[in-house]
Length: 185
Image 1: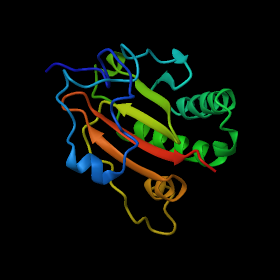
Image 2: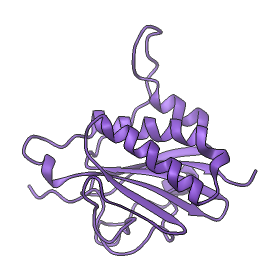
Image 3: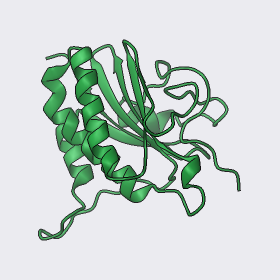
Image 4: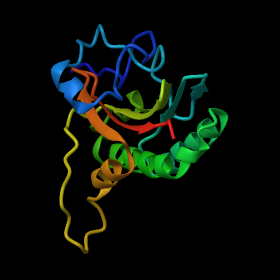
């Protein structure tokens, strides 16, 4: 079996509306892997990052420390992009997105060193998108947890605190789970 990185290929996200409403994504299925455009030319190793005026990407490991790393990265990027009013809601959503990838998308034994979570922020017009690319092809499923359960509320929180959210299979490359925020206040 050949494993493909969570995202690969040259280009940027500007042509792919991950932060579009779910109705757009249902009407416009994901392109084939060789046509798909990622956030960076190649997947970033855990700990690597880059930031420009519209795109910020960080490679994350499959562990709990990555959640804090993603929050710290988000705080720096929002400050640089002058989007600090979105900080509280965005940090909550980023925490949930990265936690879900760390818990539910870890590659099988022996493949872990070939993968990293690709966490990205994309600024486009009046939207900010948070994206987590991971190797799992499993659909994120919202559950109604027991009131005493310690987990199971992540997708409900993402839905409540973001303008929109969704996920997209990347045909052989895992998936991307995204949430977007309206930057026009």
